[in-house]
Image 1 (cartoon, rainbow, N blue to C red):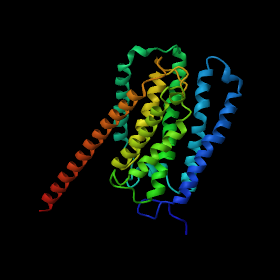
Image 2: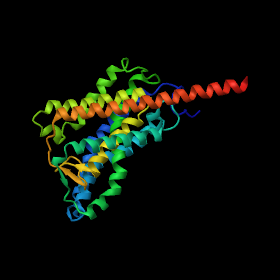
Image 3: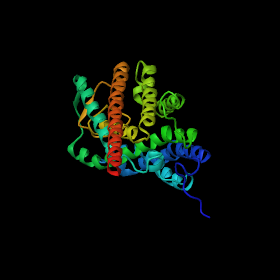
Image 4: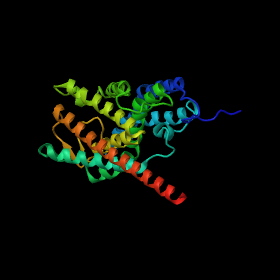
Length: 305
């Protein structure tokens, strides 16, 4: 008899295979991915104008592309489930409307924070042709990159540790929240925000805080749509709107932030504020859903009477 695919309520999450998948994905990202990047870099066209910027982007994103393919294969053949099921847990469908609204809120908040430091922002030297050439690759590949990081550093650790029974309260999930924060820091240790910052400890705390709050939000909302949307919004804002000179993500943005050493304290405050807004929005959504459910039950009881 063929084995049924893992689902909530239909057998435990295969934790051993989950751990194997994490190792496979990390090996793809850190070993095979850079090999692909080197192969792209060795192409003659990668150094020709106006394509050099596009290929610089592909070189950075190649490890994530390879890791995403590995995630598709391993989730199907090892975990025997779909990526969607890993993200939603007990729910059958992705909450795309909620994810889009979270994306919009985060993107707007980033724009407001950029206006606060507008004195450090100037028009990007990239040409219109470069912007148009970069538009679709960024739009397609950045969300994919965000999904890969969220699955490795948040989705799978939670599923492995708690299997079918993720914690229902934030207090009860404090250990996995802290672990997620540390895990999220590790791949970002090479970022210029840490390497070039005079207060690198606070810069590292930013990544730990972001990762921890994202896991807390996932547990609170019962899925990973919100942190994936926020992660994608953050990276797309950097790629399209305001990037840094020689930033970790090559792109053709509209503006450049010339202050490459933003105050870590200010960044931490911005992070807490934007997550507070998203948590408040999530609370309102949950209250509305609960209220609607109660009203529907009352209508149903009235009809039966």
